[in-house]
Amino acid sequence: MGPPAVKARLAALAVLVVFAATAWRYAAGLQEIAAVGSRAPDFRLQDITGETFRLSELRGRPVLLNFWATWCPPCIEEAPALEALHQRYGDRLAVVGVDRLEAAPAVLEFRDRFGLTYPLLLDRDGAVGDRYGVRGLPETWLIDADGTARFHRRGAVTFEFVQTMYRQALGRSIDGDGVGPVPAGGHAFDLEHLGGLLVMAAGSGLAAADPSAGVDLAAPESWTVDPRLDFPVHVLARVGDGTGDAGEFWAATTDGVWVGRPAAGGEPEDWRPAGLQGRVVLGLALSPGDRTALAWVPDEGLYRWENDEWTYLETDLDPELGSLALAADPGRPGRWLAGYEEGLLESVDDGHTWRPIGPGRAVFDLYLAGEVLYLATDQGIWQSRDVGLTAEPLGSPMRAFTAVTGSPDGILWAVAPSGDLEARDGQGAWQRQGGGPGGAGLGAGEPGGRSLGGGEP
Image (cartoon, rainbow, N blue to C red; front, side):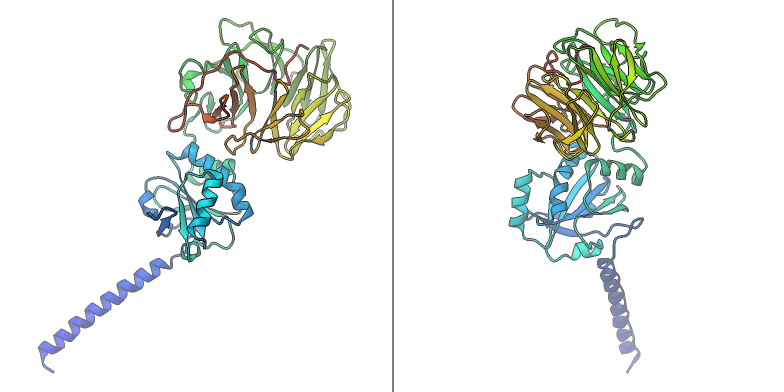
């Protein structure tokens, strides 16, 4: 064999070696298994409309990658929360569902049943799920804007879990600098009306805004902060008939109970202490007509306001319950309700003994409009037409709400812990108020209905 033939064979061998090495690297890449802290494996899949989706095309935006199936009960439970995340944060977080081992018709039916609008991909042979180490369903990965896997969760997620996951994994709040008067990492506790204004109680104090003024309610500058009550306020309770702007508010704070008027609609009078100073009060309600009130002090219990003073009330409540959403039933003297982390409690003997009723989920606030009781829960806003004995979801976004209130034109207002405001119009449609894509403004009339905590002590 002459030199030219040898050279030709060596050249061919070199080509084969390079080709084999390239093929090996390609095959190894295909088999790459996802791991937190490493590059998330790229993939191509078709969505339920037949369009091709590639993960790397989302580079530049964090991705919430959720593996699921239509037959999986926890997947069914979390789907509304994923849709709520997509609606709220779709401009800064790509929510992507990857159905495992099912055909398009079943996924299409599921999408239509739950009204899902985020992308749904088909992992028909399970290969992508295998690369992400999927062992059960659902499983969720958080991938940062550079394509690195930052968090992995086995089991269902909630709206609030993803908010926390995002902050812990990416080192910043998904809400940026905050929402409305609530700074990043802050907490909104209660919401009320005063003369057509929304008044929000939060960890930073009190703030008020006019929802009919066409302002962005997600912008801090749309709110007037009350400089005289600038410490955490947990509950607002109305004094007066609850139909207009007459009367005062009672505020449950980290320094007892205070009485006054929020700084909105003119020069208000000063707030003044009204007892239990030096104590953290996490529940407060006023009983209409009989000049009584109940206040909840964690690790101590219930206090009753009567004859212009607070006295300790002997009850069968566990002092370690945490916070209580206290409320008086204006249609039945002596009946009180208390929402807490496991559901709703009822007392029919002025607060001495209590029994569980209603939905078995966390209840943070109660609002009565006519004969309908609205409940702010960890799974959206619910309604009860028998004053708490039974309740059903009202179609709000599937996330926690800390307070709910209303106006006479049929609008319901709900606030989430982050300060996000949702409003439900008279036709039953919910819409987020302000804050970029998906946000809007409904406006508000004079306050209507009655907060169960309202009345004249």
